[in-house]
Length: 366
Ligand SMILES: *Cc1c(COP(=O)(O)O)cnc(C)c1O
Image (tube, rainbow, N blue to C red):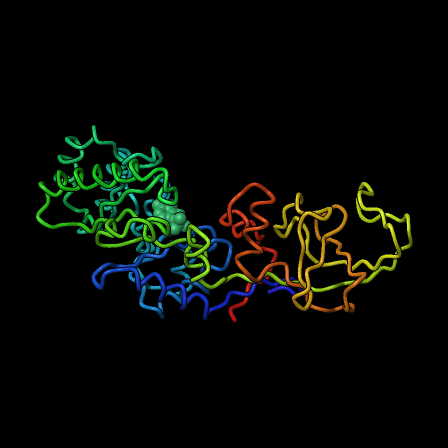
């Protein structure tokens, strides 16, 4: 924690609400994995990880090995799937009891060797199938060779076969998504033929859970939904916003008609104007394209427009008609609609707005 006034508050009640909501969509037997890659979508992986452990989540996933090491160093004991491990980190994965995704023959054979070197048996791993996303994963054509490899590498305990949807949020892509489900099923059936046990199967991310209840299989992988975003207005309205970004007014300036504000003098006062300087800027993760009146912030629930160019560490707002003094709290966002608006204005998605909040911003659980 530093003493900067900007904080990202993580609402524990909202997290619990969102977990309850998604659990209510699952069969009793479906396990729940929560993906907390990229600092738990820009929030705080340790705070969220501990909260999830208390909520009896079945599994965690991270993108990279070090993200898993951070969780282990914080004493989080849940099984952790590393979605995109690198061969250079395989010994580290084993030392920290993390579970790699093995997605091609190179990672599979190298991980087999790492487990052998460590003198271990039955090491938990996950095997990724490419069913149409064309990102990581074994192709259908790899299956004959994959069958013999997994028979040979008997020190690996395949906990799960999994795949990933390319367009589960898009109703126009229903046919493609159903093809993905069918191909995934077909490949798992083939692979199961050479195993004496049945690994778990999972394919659904948040929008998969919402749109394809028939594709729950044994586990689902919840990501953005945990933070309050479904894939449409109705689903999102049933969820609670988790990440609330707040800062404070550092100074108030009174400027006369014709005076300008911030770099390159984009904003010119058309009347006597009161400007508040906030201690947050683009280096904290506020997209520079939200300046010059494009986005607003909130003081006592009153909408206040950003004026002038957003600076690295500060930005300015027009408080001419607002009751406000130096030191007052300013909300940058505390509702999904605010985040969705920022995303739309900068032609991106809420995922990027959340993961852009920089590590300089303090995180607190409330
Ligand atoms: C990020 C990720 C998820 C979570 O996706 P959301 O759309 O945020 O629910 C699930 N699975 C994999 C493989 C991922 O990379």
